[in-house]
Length: 256
Image (cartoon, rainbow, N blue to C red):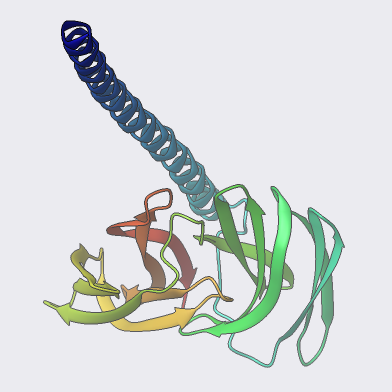
């Protein structure tokens, strides 16, 4: 009986050791699989961000090309007069903007690329009163900026306010050597500082709120005849909530 008992105990211990080894191997495999899945998701997210960034760049380049070739009458003139905007949503992807100044009223329809999220108006320093329409698709969220220009309402630029942008960041800006902006972004315990060199002399800097999408840094630089408004925000890895870097999210150019 004692020998049988010892055999049963030894067998139990042996099976227990085998079970522990199997559990460890399974744990290692599951951990490796999880890490591979996280890495794969990050690669997909990074690729999606690159695609969205390229789409935004294409849109901004198209706007610039229109101005150069004359498709947008080759001018974008700053409007700081008494212009009132009214936006009416027609359906999920269509809206009408009505602009009224002291003399006339202009109304034009616009088609967005996705479902309209918010509409509104605001005063952007150095640019004046503008109409805003944001549209959203998945992690992409874009705010289009419109203004009455020489009798018609034009799209001046598009601000990236997607989920890869940090909404709760606070910013400060320092200017050095007249053409370099040093932007510092603070988010919880994270602090990111980046330098950006402008193509012309920096005239002024401002920090504005876009809807409830967070703050945006606006840097106005001028060559004396044209203004270039460059906008910057702090970016993040949306899936991991990890703070990344400060990036350009919009360029708006107009003739003074």
